[in-house]
Length: 284
Image (cartoon, rainbow, N blue to C red; front, top):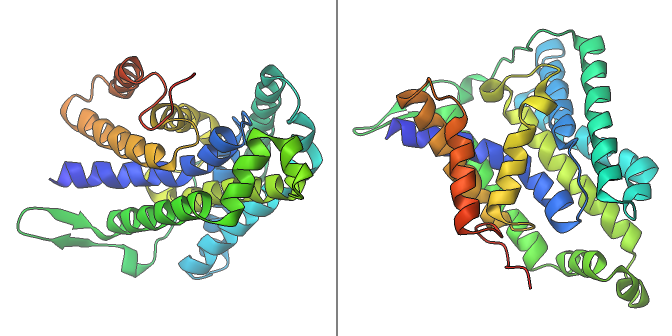
């Protein structure tokens, strides 16, 4: 039960970060492989705010989220907007280049060593129940992941902004004809995706670690979540993240010599059974 709980917590953290990629890649159709760079930015902002300036953890996480959102807005306005009509290869090459730029900048500013983080006392410790030992920090990740999942589901599936976003992505010319400011919708959506990455990066430093190689080290994990869950499906990303987290933790515990091979096996099996993803729609 403890392994199951830890796997769910790991999957929820993976969902917190990859849900932003579900917005930019799944909904907007932008191949943003540099998504992990925004998560790394959130992690560094949180670490600096906590360890150097003694800012309370909730405020540091908020600062990390807003910093990633601001970086997303700036890059969307200056660069990404020019790539909306470009080919997929151009988007891939640019985002890979952005990954290496962000890694070099992080190495120059903070050095190559992993960054430690000091969690507040209310996130430390264990709660012993008759059948399971629950870590407070991991329980916090699960609750936060569920809150983000419910909020995203309502924001995209119920609100007027979600309808405008889907219209702007599917038929931008028609959306403009109906009076929808497509450019504003896109920049808000990109900011949301970047903010989610920053949030996940900030709260995940304790579990994932933080160093300049972060964007590349976890890139495949983020892509697997979006692909297995189904393009543009937050429900699918949530289920895929939890499954990957459980299999990853269980595999490292029971068969550590196999390593991450179990995750790729799960991905291949799922895509054979459901090529469109768990909650994706079949191609016409």
